[in-house]
Image (tube, rainbow, N blue to C red; front, side):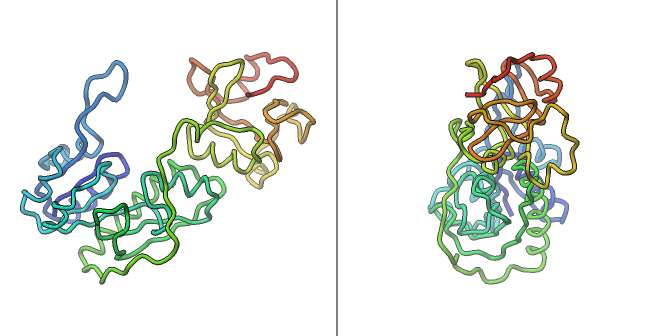
Length: 298
C-alpha cells in the first residue's frame, strides 16, 4: 500500500504500517520547506521518517496511483486528492474526530474549543468531497479538563496508528455511511486565538489549551502558554501564592497577582511569553515585570 501524509501527526501511522510488515512502495508528502528563519529547507516529518525507514519519497499525489499499490493510506496529507486518482486506487483516510462531527482541517482544536467531552479517530474511505466517506471504524477518546490540543493529537495519532495496523492485518469490516449532523472544523486563524477577556474563564481556558492563545499588554503581543481557571478542580492540586486574589472588582483583563479577571471567573497564569522573549514561568515574569496596580491585558 502507498502512504500519504505530512506532519508529525502522520508519522506514527507510517511507522506502525512499516513495523507491521506492510509493503509501502512510495510515501507521498509535502515538499521540503524552511522550518525556521535561519534554517535551510528541510523535509516534512513524514519525509524524514520515510527516509529513515528506507522508503521512497515523492511529492506528487499521482504517484499514489502510478506506484502500482492496491490501496493507499492517507493521514493529514494537507492536500485534496483528485477524483481521478481516487477512481483508480482506493484510499483510506485516518481522521482525528468522530465523524461526521468536525470534518475539515482542525478537528482536534475545534472539539476542544467547543467544550466537547470526547473525540476520537475515524477510518473512512476517501472521497473527493471533504471527509464525507463511509466509515470502517471509530475509536473514541475522552477529553479531560486539562487536555491540550498537542497532547490529544499525540494520543490520537498513536492510538489510531495501532488500531489501523491491526485492523488492516485482520481485514476491514464493511464501511457504513456517516450518521449524524455534520460540523466543520475550519483552520484556526490568529483571531480565533486572540483572547477576549469578557468571555468566561472556562472558554479562555480552552483557548489556552488549544495553543497560541494571545492578548496584548502595553500594546505588545503577549502569549499565554499555560493557565487554568482559578476556581476549577484543576486548581486544587496547586498552591496559590498569597498575592493571588480569589476575586476582585477589576474589569475583564485586569491582573491581580497571577490571576486575570474574565467575564466570569478568573484565569490563573502558569506559563507566559512576553513580546520578544521566550516562554517563562508566570511568577518569575511577575516578579521581574513590576506591573503597576490595575495593569490590564487588552
